Amino acid sequence: MKNSNSKLNAEGWEVTPPPSNKIKPPAMIEIPEGKFLMGTSEDDIKMLQLKESDWAYEWSDNDLFAAEQPQHTVTLSAFEIAQYPVTNGEYHTFIWDVGHRLPRNWVGFTYREDTQNHPVVGVSKLDAEAYITWLNKKTGLLFKLPSEAEWERAARGEDGRIYPWGNTFDPWRCNTAESVKKGTTPVGEYSPGGDSVCGAADMVGNVWEWTQSLFLPYPYRANGDREDVRSAGRYVVRGGAWYYTRKLARCAAREGILSNHLSPSIGFRLARLLT
Image (cartoon, rainbow, N blue to C red; front, side, top):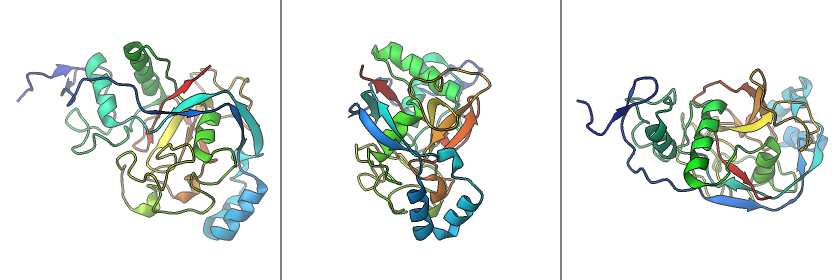
């Protein structure tokens, strides 16, 4: 039976209204202006080989750390990062309001039962940007996707740590393949033990997160062309995900994905400049 409060989205599918239509800005964490270490150093690789020799030697032999090198110092202006990734519940409100297409993995034209506070996945970078445009109009604020440098600074702090909590992997601090969850978990479920120094949750594991930066070689230059919009470009995703092992759940790990790609392991979180 059709829900009397439902309506059709742009693709003609019936959309069930969200539990609440109230729109409020996400909880944000301020990151001060300053320098941090970006990328993976040779010492980092040696540490990984010592502690995680089952994969780190193979990665080194096959030059798979190259995309994260050289490690270098980056200076960023002050900004804010969202404490959590955007959730199904938050994204549902957006869909209900504007009739945007549904994420690929939703069932019955809404998210799966009991996953309101899970990070939304099955959204492209283009979908994330549409959500941000809508939220900015609704709130009068200027949210954006984080640059990959902003994302990494929020994940690892200023001291170049390998994981948000330190230099040793701990499966009890994040949702990766080692956790055997076989899917996303509610945002903040691993807090505070898995939080970064600034207090951001789920920076590694759970879902990969879109950034606004093109996937280009290092060193990173904040005033370069990495944030240019290119329809054919690959954009950086960060953080690893529930489907992947600890190899990619590192603060410096990066992958390049086309902006229209949809995956059950990719979501996003918001950022905002303070200048």
